[in-house]
Length: 28
Image (tube, rainbow, N blue to C red; front, side, top):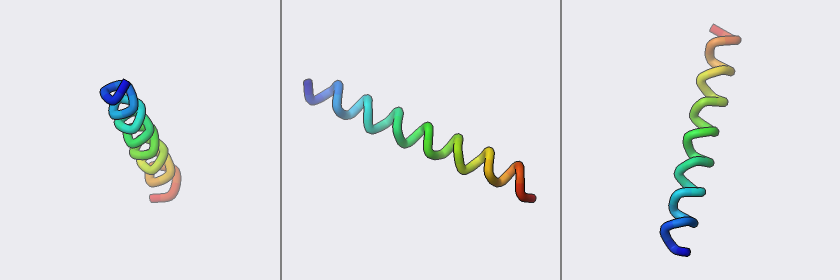
């Protein structure tokens, strides 16, 4: 259960980074 929570947090972090990258690409 604990490892599952950690994995979910990691995935959320990855998604946030991808979102930021997309925004940066859109607004150079």
